[in-house]
Length: 387
Image (cartoon, rainbow, N blue to C red; front, side, top):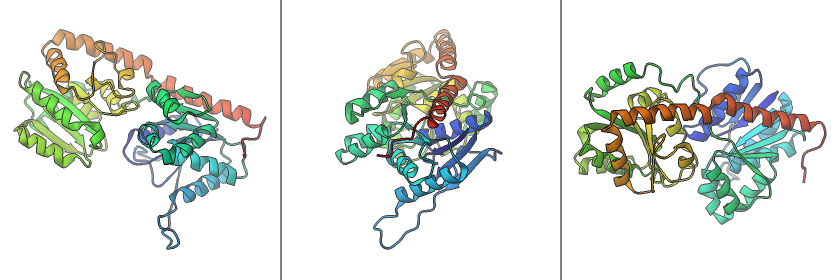
């Protein structure tokens, strides 16, 4: 099968899932074409049956803004025709689903199937902008299959956008060959020495793009409360617009010697293995892919009730869920967990068993593959909607 994938290539959950899915499809023998503004950052090396097609956007004086959407649609159409794609998978309703729909109309292959995956921001943020709702609805209703990454996001899409089409929840997954507990103790020891963290100290971790919506200030406050009772350090991985305010808060609380700003990392798996607990206290979160990666590496999660987080964490069995903004409760859970080795070991083992059962890579990749096969099988029997 020949599959086209369009996603944002930069650091972020949607780009990670799109890229990992493409890699897994290629490993199953399919031909995969990434169509985006640059090479996806998780596409680490060359594959014989993976191709990348960059969209070059020219800045013409006739346009106030560079025409990215039109250029992308034209590029997708070109790739559909030149490589005779069977399916295109658009990650995000806007602009990508709409671009894919336009591309199909521009191409000669009107029966190419369109799968659209909703990742969160296209609904939880853009879905509240009434000027964009019609475009989002159009992207969903004119795709052949629409999926979302959590039941919470599926329901929010129905509530906000009210599409006519069915939306299927297909959970995210991680590359289990990269995110696992192998060499966890050795890596933990090495990184503690590198970061000058005492051997006996517990490590809390968070990674994100440090936007307001991630509530990183609540994570720092949770750490501060926890550190009053537990010998622990906080490792923050990533960068973003809230970084200055977070550094200021750390300074104001007088905890600079126990908070480690590790910056943007191309491979965070070692940092997950360093961690005893992973914190994700977002105000909005459709799934929490970084948290799932950390769980696979053995870090027990503390998450907020935002979006799909509580679908990933089974409260009091595989981690803890607290109300958004309740950093004191998060600290209470951490203190109890990190003070009780037997409880920690029991919860960690339950967590590892649960994520390997519910978010198994082979199972979820097969779900997507079956959707592609379904569209390919139906392509010869009908022409797609040409409105």
